Image (cartoon, rainbow, N blue to C red; front, side, top):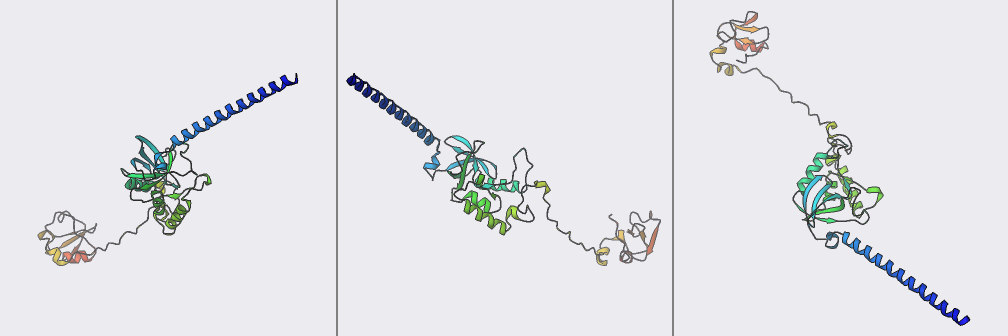
Length: 272
């Protein structure tokens, strides 16, 4: 009986080991499958940093559309935030149009390099790719927009991105030099207000000095303003010389010996 029990015990251990090995194999298979899926989700630019993609649309200052492997993808730029222009829930914000126009100027129909940031994740809640954008000549678009005053530095949920320090320095530079949205005459840094609420810079109107025409200029007008006879200055201040259109019709007037005298008293010539 003891011998038989030993055989049964050995078989039981073998079964347990077999089950454990099968479990390990299944776990390894699952891990391998997940690894393959993750590797397929990584875009080519993560593997080939120099790869360029066509920008096929600019939604606003911080969102573009790029053609990636034959598919149009919405791309939200990391680390920056521009005033709203297309959000149906909000009015066009201060300096929003300027930011959007700048993005279009720099990116529309251009080729760009896209760079991801593991800290920020691959996509946002709207399914947009999260990327840094570099122009073909190497210009760091995200940083340039902040540095030139077209965007704010933006840290999402306190996730420190790889270029956060550069972006904060760029924003400080824009603020100190009052560029773009930091200028007092634009938003003074507050882009939350509506663009229509921005108070335009008031320019004092120029003072226009009106001088009476010289005698020589009056003489050149000919008989219509002849200095001969009595010049009538009407109650409205118009000087009518003999022979002009309203001379005979002017019944209430002050008499002057010449056009010069009439004008010198504060009168003026008729328009016709």
